[in-house]
Image: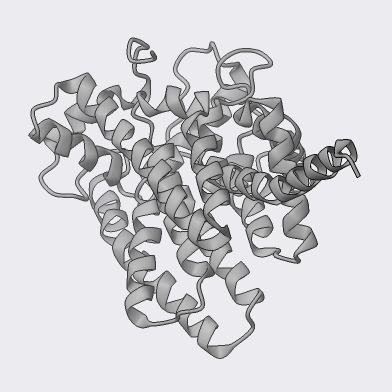
Length: 347
């Protein structure tokens, strides 16, 4: 349905893939989406198809992974419902043929979060989770904030030396996976986070000059700290609060799309609070943090805000909430129907 929509930023992935001599040699883009494009090119896909096919496969894998992980954690009904909610989401379908890195990032975060939720603290598991976290950063480098915050949540909810040591090992593994890219960026561009400092200039120029302005990279790379504190620390805190508010009341409801599914998501949050399972609830603000630094900026047109693709990191978790809501409401609905039918039965 959406395969005829022109590609945006990922249109340059095939050229970067052909120029790459090794995994971390991905130019100004993070390596994972470029590597996936290179793999599709090696299988014979054309330029546009290589980009689209990679994320279509990622989307299909995300649905299957959600079915498995959510089903194992919350039961088969919740797992099936969560996977179904992801599969029918129109924005996930749209962006799955756009080659964007956000879907791949979301899949890796799903694996990372469900893996951390378990009680097993073996070093082999730490290595696997570190690999998932590191590859997630190599989809979008700002995900380092999410990976670190979720580890902190894990430690805070289980204040033990073993959990702290395990989490430190996971983060060390994740950094080990990511470090060669940072080194390569420094050698090639003079900064380990060159792509991000270039992006901050883009966002600042977009905010100051409007989304229809000319060269939005004019002025060169800008430090992330300078961008966040561009109007001072008080304004930065206010902007962050506004961005989170917009995320919860504007962006995420739009991302869910269907009102009835929004009710299921809210029901899932209710059941989690009722059961005092706070970990899945604390993960959501962590997933929103990186995008919240730019959520107040009109990216495409006046009043547009940013593209919904930047919130795809959190879509799988919203579907988990929805699956839990459906799973929890189903017995209540069944019982209500049963009672209603009993009233009409002869004594």
